[in-house]
Length: 475
Image 1 (cartoon, rainbow, N blue to C red):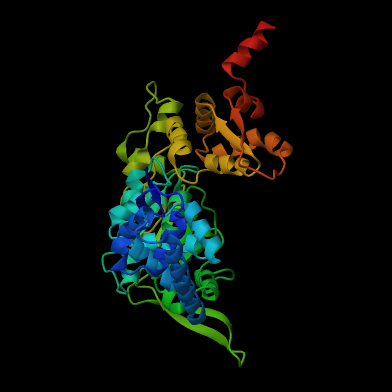
Image 2 (image 1 turned 180 degrees about the horizontal axis):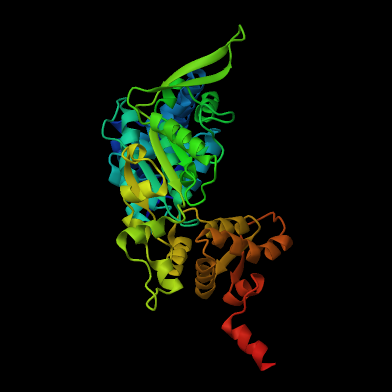
């Protein structure tokens, strides 16, 4: 019977052969030439042409010798990065459980972390980068496609150590709970695995360089404790809540100066040939450590909700609701006016033309419908629903939800106006009473099934379903 073991398709016909053990031996010692014949060796072991016990003892000694040499030289990480690259040229990716087996069997704690590095190092185009992010974020394909271009250009320039002249800054906008942070987190994770530092700057916390307080350079300098100055040359700077950089629609006396000075600092990050002056720690003679950081290779990304931008766009388009013919609230939620944002609208918001002209990519996310929220719960990797299911398995519970329950959760999250972020709140309200009563189990192999229905969800979030309402009225 054909099956996949450690990424290799094999015919498991001889139960006396430990295929997983045999393949891990061959993985450790694989070379670009020998990796081509792994399946042939497995077939010979299965048919008895090669004595398995004798072969296994010989290869175990070879594997131990290789691992000892790597440990002595301190080359374990680069060695296994190369081994995975070699292995994946011919075979599939091993499963997570197989990697855990490998770590436990050979007393190595690196493999699960190394494989993602190998995967991102193999990215050859913005399309491939976009596909990786779409596994985790559903319903925002256009924005992911647009952001994948500057992020790929940045990663590729770091990988080949050159300055990309066509790379531009990007801005991502949309209301809370529709995926801005998740998209940037996924792109940031990939960039970080490649070696590019990702530095998140909260626009509410920093002040202009001439003012007293936390400056942009102070935030960047903190990263010197984790990265070298050469790595920081290719950092990704994410300005969170960039809409707060200017005080649109709530301007007060005294805010004009700080707005102008803050924008001036941001613009310096876009001036070719400019360098930042960073200070971090002290030398042995108690003088401050100073560093010069050229900005030519930085990637600048802004994100923000930009509440009120829709009104600016509607005024420009002259498409505001007319008296007597206004759009309903539901229609307005579905209408994505933000997709039509232009440089003119950003200037109307309060950003100066000099900065807007330096931002090459404007991304407006799609509003999440109830159906899209449902699809995220069902298909996006590492979403909060899957985390609850994994958590329950630790306590011997096989958790599941009826479709009507998930649809109800999606509808409630949509109505809240907080997007997918409200799904976490709803699930916490539903599951807290269950988690209060669960206890540790010695054996979680035999899981106890538990199904959550719509009525259970409604009861725990203070909502009545139509069935519950009918029962109440009939009393």
